[in-house]
Image (tube, rainbow, N blue to C red; front, side):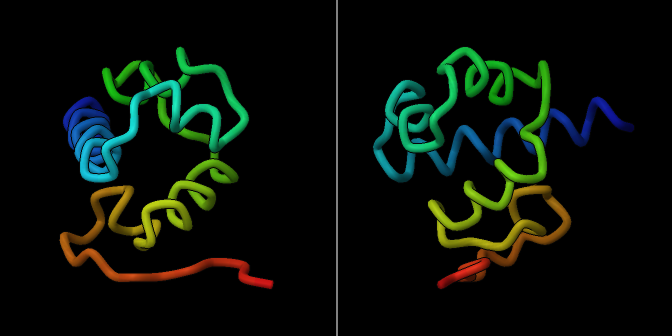
Length: 82
């Protein structure tokens, strides 16, 4: 079951990045991380840390629940806006 969730989250992260037209390297630069980390997320090798889930949520203008496959409703949501 856990591996199925990893697969769904990986697919969702891949799809969102492609919707923006970004490469893995471009996304990594926006997050100030190594592009290999993005590749691991998209292949199910690991998941983003919570701080990066928040940043991804802001970049993609969606909820963390959507990123984590807890809902299929793609809501526009901005966290910790200053």
